[in-house]
Image 1 (tube, each protein chain N blue to C red):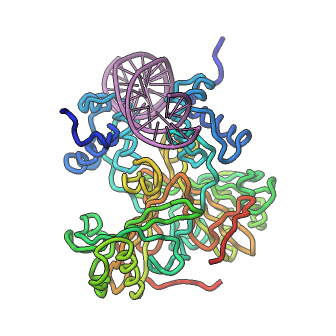
Image 2: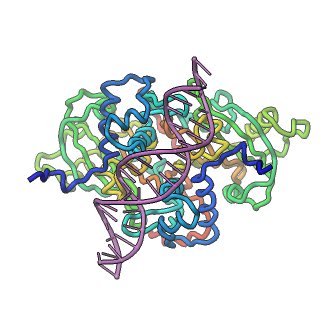
Length: 254
Length: 254
DNA sequence: TAGTGGTCTAGACCACGCT
DNA sequence: GCGTGGTCTAGACCACTAC
């Protein structure tokens, strides 16, 4: 009698909720507008708060919502296109890049880093910390590992740590002839220190961009950049946005 | 008195749990090994199952674990490096690419697609469905949108749908002169149909790679490829594999 | 059929941002 | 202090897989 055709497809509540909320966001809310709080939304939809939260989490993962403890849930602006492609074919720290050096320390390389630098476990590296800011918002935090062997002329006069030393390491890098680079993107979750720089909670989803820079037949530096996955869209190639200028192949013979 | 130094840093339980489990995975478990079930793990650590699950979810997001309903939780192998970069500078469907056409239908373009094709809302497009398989596992599902105007010579003889028609559309694409392309990567959650192809649950985290192909001064095609975020690392540039350690893969020459 | 992970509930308390 | 989202609990039932 009461059998509906939905018997065969018991769609989870949170999934259906997400769909309903998503459509409501499109039609009834403006960017930046604040939603009713979770307890009220849950009551309104007749579900437990945990279920409602499962739907909100998905929408936040997709960049539709932004949630801040103590404040509320707001409608997120469209993701920012952040260029990580061809236009950055120079060394990190080249003039005009959008990174801001924060700190630098020198110590033995962690095992995982040493492996990527094809060096031994205890080799000493400069570790440069940088932040990338776009439209006034922090979008990425980076750890740049530079073996001391890559920048032998770094003056001992430089400060032992801090932004000044970071700039010194970056300056020395520019003097090398780059032979190529190598990028990978994967999903990760923010470590505590990255989360702090990115104004997110630890464990927040991030896109981890790992870049290896080659010079003098060796891996001269490795960058591990952590982008906010909720607010960023990583773009490659010339036209990050809607610009369709003519594209000349720059397929360089090695 | 009983005040410990931890007062200032009330680390969440699930975060601490994740750390502990992560270290246990490194030292006590082999790839593919099956973990104790969630109820037992929760009891062993003295937390509620929901809390334990929060830690497992993070580890799965980071590609450390694999969970399958009705089966159990296993230790995941390292992520597979999937090339989405320079080596694929040809049209989709070019000889030797790792995609497998599945289906093709022709209909009016959805609004979002029409926008990327800089066309009108109702323009007719061929929608090609393809699957990418690596090491025997499905890693990505793609929807390739090709305006009928891009492949005017597609014979009417072709089947109205199915893999045969998909191959026809791809074949016609090869005849165009590519002027450039354009890629973006962002985090998303799997739609129901993609999830089925990727052997995941709807909502699973995925990396969405959007590519625009330019020819004859227009956007000749748009591809939206959905990669499993748990098992894939997207690589760009020359050297895809970072050669983490023993890599005795039988790289078959085709 | 037994055992797994997936969903859902109805509470509670905590940390944080504002005012 | 108050309201917000974040964490946590102790259950229950369901869907799926393998035997």
